[in-house]
Structure formats: structure tokens, C-alpha cells
Image 1 (tube, rainbow, N blue to C red):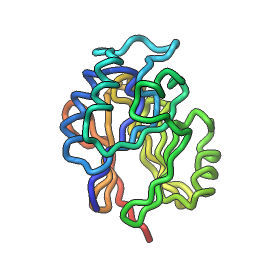
Image 2: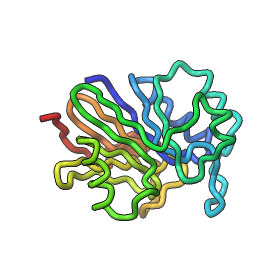
Image 3: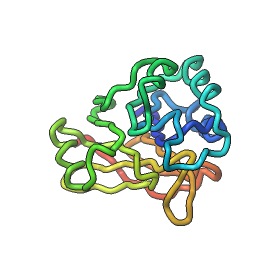
Image 4: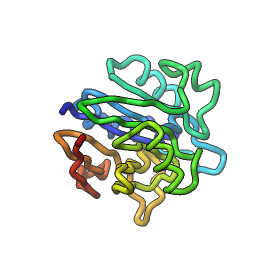
Length: 187
């Protein structure tokens, strides 16, 4: 299986994206589950907030990248990102079916599971809460990589996820330490 990197909730932090680059450069596919450029009216400005540099980086790179629209992504963001952001994406990769959306569309875990099951998904990737989550419920793996720039778990630690060789890992962005991991199979 090739390496997939999963990120969410960048909120315009170019410096957080640069920290993530060591993981991104080793990947074959990058999935970003929304809230890419704007910090949001209820959030503080992120460290390294620079939407111009971040959008230029995403446009000028050779990344194989799929992004979806978050609750603070706007029409203007569609104009400066590589393509208009869809509400959700369906990815079939290495025998796994992955559905990705931002997550603000559903409040409960049960609603998220039912959404994923509509697509016969093995994995549902979402963001929005800024808290890393990795668990399997009712046959669906729920994966929230946490936030690259505005983590909200206690203690707040920026995080990123990877899917490779039948395993999902959520890592601390700065140290690379594994926060949680899970075996994944497509059986």
C-alpha cells in the first residue's frame, strides 16, 4: 500500500503546513478534510497565518492532493486553491473505500457512521473538532487527524495521520510520536 497523509484544519497556517511537509513529501496522496485557508471568526489567528503563501504552495506543488470544503472555507478560497472544493470525496485506494468530508454536517458519531455506510466506506475521514480520533464503530473506521494549527484536545498537540501498509497512525506534528494507531484491512 502506498502512503496516504491525512490532515485537517490548517486554518491558514503556512508554518504548520511547512512542518507537515516532512510527512507530505514521503506520501503518494494527501487528503485534507477542510478548513484550509481562513482561520474562522471564532478562532484566533494561527501561528504562521499566511493564506497567500499557503495557497501558492498548494497550487505550485506537484502534490497528489484531494481537499474538501470545511465550514469556514469560502467561495473566494475556491478561486485561489487548485480547484473548487467539493463537499465530500470518495476515494478507492488499495482495496479500501474512503469517504472524506469536513464533519460539521453531522453532530453525532451515529450520523457520521450512517453517512459512511451510504458509500460502503471502510474509513470515514473528517475534521472540524480539531481533536484526533481513531476508532472502529459498526464496521467503519472513524479517522480525524486533529488539527495542524489549532489543536483543541488536552493538552493541545498539532497532529497529522498516515495510512500505510495496513495501518493508520496519528502522529504529533512536531515530534512524530504516535498518538494512536490501528490495523486496517479491506476484508
